Length: 184
Ligand SMILES: [Zn+2]
Image 1 (tube, rainbow, N blue to C red):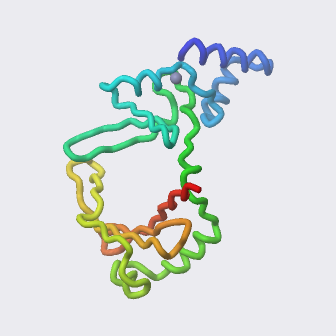
Image 2: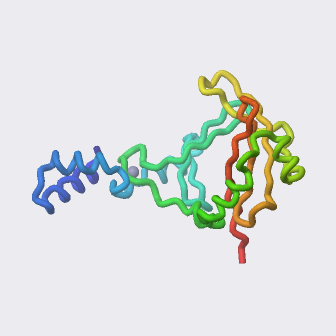
Image 3: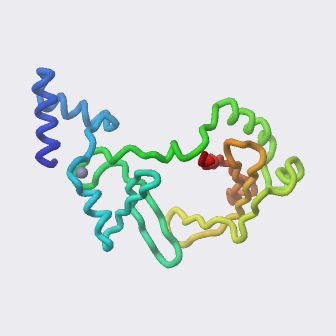
């Protein structure tokens, strides 16, 4: 634990007249209340071209970026790897149209009963995008990447695209991809 983190812990314990152990276990069981990182470790890592940590200005997020052959994976860093503090708040949500519960319920109604690409095409017409080659998904053990058919319906909702991915067992998995906010 960094000096700052320890100081914060001591301060919390002192302020509330509780033992260090009590405060520590409370904080550890509620990690979302953890203090914000201010050690600068993520910033320094992102500035180092040899480090896998990258900062994305648009979303205000730090990512762990792993590259192998033609694949790149990005993992969102929620907590600083150096001091354990919270990484800066993401602005990702602000970049996309909000989708209401009613809209999701409406879309679920439309896709209720659609289990295959053929059923989707019969009921909704051809998709707006049929991604050539599909999407690559790594197998759980990482041994190889498999390619799955992936199509997008983008005109059903003005808030979200609806993506259908071949789930491998003959059925499609349905997911929602929020539309980027149109800049005014
Ligand atoms: Zn930190």
